[in-house]
Image (cartoon, rainbow, N blue to C red):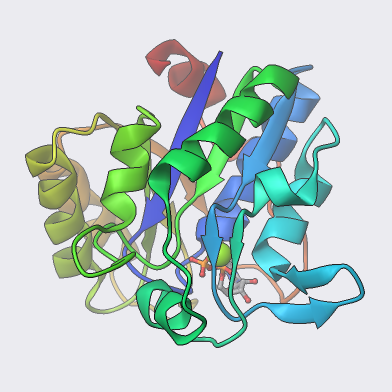
Length: 226
Ligand SMILES: Nc1ncnc2c1ncn2[C@@H]1O[C@H](COP(=O)(O)OP(=O)(O)O)[C@@H](O)[C@H]1O
Ligand SMILES: [Mg+2]
C-alpha cells in the first residue's frame, strides 16, 4: 500500500503529464491507482466549488473513483505560489489534514500518485514547503526533468535538495518539453552520471492535448522500489 510523490524541476515541466502516464500504466497493469494533488493554485470556479485542472486530469486517469475533496484538499483561485494564494484567503495549509485525505485514498487504492505544486521547495507557508508533504506521506520521490536549456542546474539542485531532506529518490524522468533542444542525448548522459537514482523513462515531445505515451515508464523498477 503505497505510492510516489511527483516533483519536478519547476512548474510546467510535465509533472501532471508524467503522473497521468504513471496512473495509466498502473491501470493497464491491473493495479488500483488514484492520483492526488494536495495543493493547487490557479483553480477555476465550478458549480461544486473550486476545481484544479491537474486534480481533474489525475482523477480521470485513476482506476478507482475518489472524492474530489480527498484528491485536492487545498484549491486556490489565484494562479500564484500556494503560500501566497492561501494567505490571500486566510487559509493555513495543514499537512496533517493532507495526510488524513491521503490515508482515505490509500484505503481505495494500493498506489497513490501525489503531484506536488511547482518544485521541491515551493513554499506552503512561512516555514514549510512541498518537501514537507512528501516527507510526511513517506513517499519515494520521482523527479520530472523538463528538458530545455537550464534544466541541468534545476535537476541537480532538486536532486541534491531531495537527498539533503532525507527523502528517497525513486528515480527521474526526462520529459522532452522543448522539441528543438540541442544535444538531448548528451544532456541525458550528463544527468545520468550525476543523479544517484535511475532514469525511469524518457517522454517524447508530443502534440498539444495528446495523451501521454503508454509504457514510457519503467513500471517494474518503480514498483520494486516501493
Ligand atoms: N512531452 C511533452 N510534449 C508536449 N507537451 C508537453 C509535454 N509534457 C508536458 N507538455 C505540456 O506542457 C504543459 C505543462 O505540462 P504539465 O504536465 O501540466 O506540467 P506541470 O504539471 O509540471 O506544471 C502542458 O500544457 C502539457 O500538455
Ligand atoms: Mg501539474
